[in-house]
Length: 261
Length: 261
DNA sequence: TGTTTTGTGATTATACGGGTGACATCTGAT
DNA sequence: ATCAGATGTCACCCGTATAATCACAAAACA
Image (cartoon, rainbow over all chains, first blue to last red; front, side, top):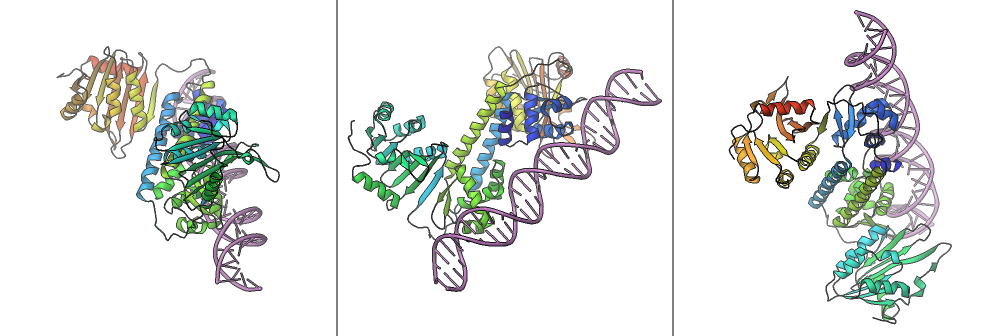
């Protein structure tokens, strides 16, 4: 219930609005006074909040005396919010499309390495990169939870011309991967140093390692204490990070060590 | 472009964050200084804004000196925002489902008339009501723009047991409706007073008029100056509004006047 | 070495939203 | 008719968040 209020605020409602909506959701119908008691919103501000909510299509007002309010059904509410959101994203999409790109003298260096944060973001980028592959994919997975449906799907959808190598840090995980991806060549990585890197005081474990067409690389790590995933991402055949990854492969460290399938 | 910034703020970003993201969207890649000049965000605050954006998965940071930033692709951005939003709606749904309903002595009067605001909200309610119909629907449409695909669909999906009468304020509109809904009985309403109601100084025109199973009624009006649609909605067989609507029908005013199909 | 650029942190100003009270109106009881 | 309580509207205060500015150390550059 505090949860609901919090989420509503994240969705753009003010505190009073959120409290009032939640209050109405459990009251089916109520007056300003009842609401004020229920939600601890000052009675005199209930009216403002309700008006805002009505304008957003989340409550209905009965213009009697005293006024009575009631919330729309949960499905109606979520649909309304969804519509609102979709409209906004649409507008954003249009607005950005009409503007976009100011060309500029390219003073950016060749060695580009970009940082990403967050499981979800990195997951998206990973599948995007996989989908864009034309010749080869080398993927090492460091944790079972990273083997998501989306990931499997993106690998499944690849054309036959793309060679897929998928590695794991343990035999256990390799078996699981082979089960999900019978088409792909799987292996257990020889990169023992990936398994647990000890720095000053913080321990970080490897998350993913993805090399696409030998020209794009993504490496992520996971901070065990927080579970937060961070990644770096390099692109371009001449990119330093990519070169290193290729060199590792050439030495047989990254893939093709003890291939079983 | 101001548009884009505004929408991004509506989607929960702070002003600086929004400006920086838009700035990056048209710069493909840039430093704090470039961004500051482009977006008029104080240079020293660009860094904070970018960090927030990175945490939300909307920009990437190149940790060189000077740092360079770039926005993720538009599709990645919208997907990220969509995911965020979906997760929130999901949480809201769960949270509200676990709580919900405090039963209470029913002191609400029998005469319930609720107010709704906004085209979209009223449209949703209209189709919801139609979908719940079991025996009869009487619908009068006052403006062509209200004959939306959703509305047509909801009427099409009704089981055969439901009698559908759809009226229009003009023969022109009636023909159009008959084209969209060959199954339904259409007519031109005899309610001339609906066409243009003159009050003190403001003129209002009728929007929709919906009677479902003779027990639920929805009437909307449109303020021509603003285009804003407002509606009232009554439910229950004994409801005053509903009774009036039934009486109108009984007098042959509402439907069945000069039925052609 | 001196100068500019870059990144971080602290500080100030301001606008928005939460919180409170005054007041006119309405309602229902006496 | 009168009065007390309830109701709805407004105006106002105040604290926090955020926009905006400044001070400064580290790095890059010449």
